[in-house]
Image (cartoon, rainbow, N blue to C red; front, side, top):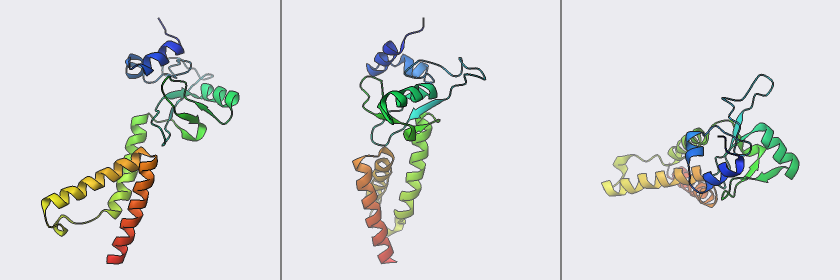
Length: 168
């Protein structure tokens, strides 16, 4: 039978991933699956919590977000046990977490490649070029992940961009 939100969120938090992997399109609060339970009057769209500070990725229907915001103010804590993310309307996206992360990665990669644009022939050794490529990937990952590492990566990008501008 259908399990309630408490059992579902406990299963997700304990790593019993059947609910999150087999049925990713369910609201973590009420359990609604918009692909199965909707009509023209009750159409529900799931929104993914995509904060940069904390990787949440849990999905909420608009009705539950509305109830959470009304009851607790402009934001509320993700109800999934073990998740410490804050849910705000501004951090909700209709795309699944994977799509959001791919989009963030592509945007970060474009920004990084505009700054890290040295030619392989400008390096003395293959090892030096490989280290350079590793720095590129580390910076892309930091920008995509968010948090303090993203702030450090932003500063590093600005420093490298200014050094590149001086050398031109």
